[in-house]
Image (cartoon, rainbow, N blue to C red; front, side):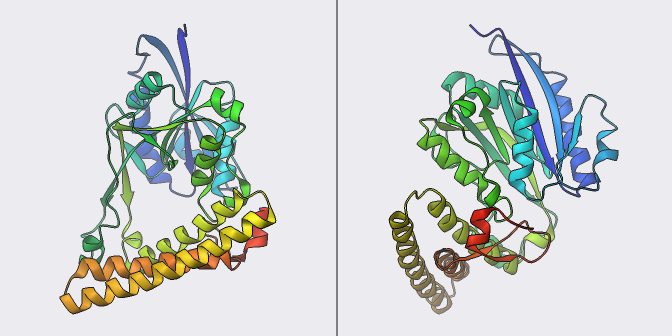
Length: 327
């Protein structure tokens, strides 16, 4: 029977020192009070992975002597997440939280308790959006920032890494890591989820673990929401292609994405038009978003990728993405 659990909290950051400071303050407030969960002694270590080669987060982390600070110079979210996996290699579980999220009370202990009770490979907690400004009525009507919720322990097939616990022993057995080729497009957590399930692992939900996602005004515009929908459609196709082992299966994925994308475009256009006729803002917003997601699905099939996390040009042909090249 396990008598001690070594937990590593991994915080990825890139040029957000003020947000990181608040996140670390709230994490450490929980860590200092957490010495046992489910009758097991807990040891917690916090690791900050700075994806800025200029080490812009160093000054913030120096305020907290107990924190381990490392710089990952390779651009991209996959490189940062894999560096956290490497830094946590001697631990039992790794818990990811983003630098712009504020963990709420029992965020960490709830993740651990759900993991202990289910034995899952991964446990995903809730993320709750909070906003700097009042939402545009179009954004609010579309419900684009409404996050899902469900009973703890519910099996899920895809997990976002913003509030996520990983069982490191099971991850090692499965051999799952974040694909470097998805580091600039996003979707690396979706692909990881697929590998976990394919490798015989399980992912469950934890409703009691919650973190606030502080959404800046720049991310509550129509342009951002629609670009995000396009990007998500694009990465959905790229993930399916990554999971396809043969030329034939990849051809089928492309054909399916073209059909699915065109169907979404047609359906979204019809819903948007219906919304205009009825004066229904929700239908107009959701329909337009569906059009952009459909276009993203098709673009992935046609060899175009949108590099959401790139620091230079954001457009790339898929062959470059699949080889993991460039930023």
